[in-house]
Image 1 (cartoon, rainbow, N blue to C red):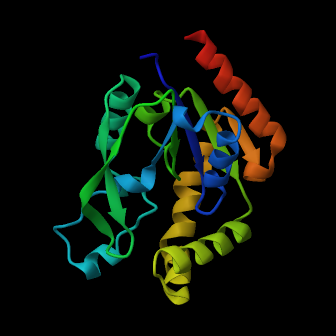
Image 2: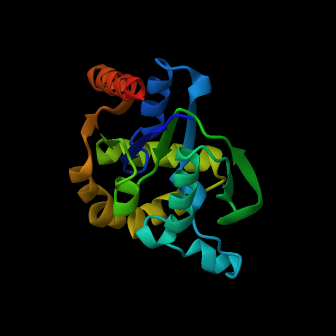
Image 3: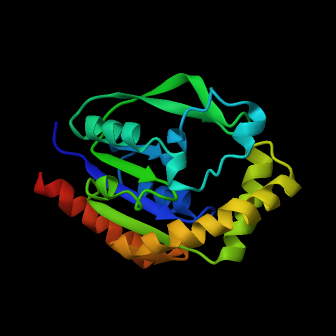
Length: 207
């Protein structure tokens, strides 16, 4: 099959990365796209107790199994299916089950630190950074973690102050300089979305 177009969507927690992906979906055939979430590639922590897993800094580059992620991206881009890990955010560990992901023309990689790793950056055809105000990101994270991940308000705020905010300032924010396009307002930035879709189509036509 033809070479896949690999699109990276980075940005801080709650910045609107998924919204950008959804807006891109509106202009391309859904059967041509697959999404890989960096969150699926948190390291396996079966050797740690639950109490120890809770203390892990999940916003640090070392929290991710980048070797596995890179191998899976290369497999997909060469036309091979993968068994993507499934992460349980309530247990803070990988599930035993995996998800079969088949190669597609367009692969979207989404995550806070995908631009922090050079080997991942070098694989990306298009590098995006969603730039959103910190207060908006915090509110979105609170709502998401309580509704979708079984967290309490106190635990979300404590984690944000202890690890999320410091890690964003130290690791995430600086990766903005590697982006081809910085998107203020995320998926609501229609001009940026139009530019991205046009670039995707031009790359597909090259093959």
